[in-house]
Length: 260
Length: 265
Image (cartoon, rainbow over all chains, first blue to last red; front, top):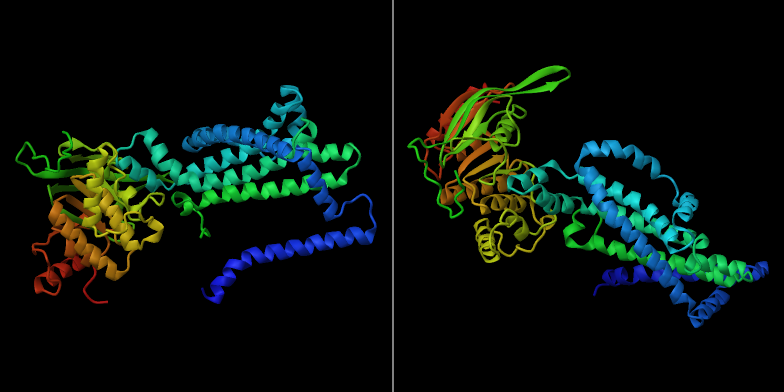
């Protein structure tokens, strides 16, 4: 292996590790120098994480948050994709619904909290409904635009080979739109993970968002607050990395300009 | 009229061997309240198994004629009949090979070539794919995706995808226009080889005079917009053609003259 190839292998690992270490050290120093007794040091956050593991809360809360995202996001995909296909396929329908979508889209899902509590009561359903709302619009819009942007030449080729409308949809339009849809799926997953934290602060009594608010309320345990924040960040990173892997499938890689 | 999947071209019931007849085709587009005439009074008949080139300057409407013949666009006036039937839409018996490459980027070479074979049993499908992969010389690239192929290879995939469904006509819209000149020459002789092996009726649109004279049985010379048929030149030279022979050059110069370009620059 050449030196350059070796450098390519260790650089993506070493630089983030180095940055992380420096930031952790700066954090520890600042806590020490400022003499704060509210904000925890990295070490006490680590101890807090250990405590959460011992109590069995860490995996339960993480699992609860992921489950809510899974169901809310899953519902958004299940309903958003057919809706987007429909709107993209029939420009007339898109013309009717697009203004409504564009108006609803910029509303933060947090604004729907009172509505969702009225509809579903305080509980899992309310939280999952908010996640659904946050993820639904990016999925609909990216699917709709993906379908609209399918080059006419692909549709013509499909029709030329005698495809029925249903086959044209599944064998030409869907695969041609998929790269753009995946971009929407990724944005929607990021939003879903943002929303679950907010929703859990209000609607339920488990999950990482609940951990943040509960640790503060029950005895101002800021070590646990920060531990929860770190967990939220790491899980978000893992979710994004997981969904980015789908861009590497060969049947969609053509649609991503910079994909390796 | 039924398609002939077995590969034997259906013998016409009548002795007339006209594969395609265009009668009084006219096309006008509405624009800015006015109407722009693109095609006027196109009358043409093409024999079964004939190789015809539509030759004309860019934007003259020759692609529009091809789209009308393939059934993608309805003419404003007149009608096109293929095997006696009026063309009313695209049909797998006649495949259009696109100017911009229409190869599907989400499918492998195999997947593209087998795209139109969904009605066949898997074994027959595989056999057909293998045959056409070999015919266009893409062995070893069966599992490759289009993004990993050169322009010429993608064009071969598209031609193979068209041939695999065993159509009796091919419409080619400047298929080699985006290729470099060497690849273009290779692709021309490949197309002739395939045409001689499979004897499809081919209608080939080009703005390249040499291409037309090298390939076609007859060259249909179009005028600038609104396009009319200006002259029909029969190229009575057997393949392979000697492109430096006096007869070839004479035919080419005749076409140049018809277009209004004397053979000097």
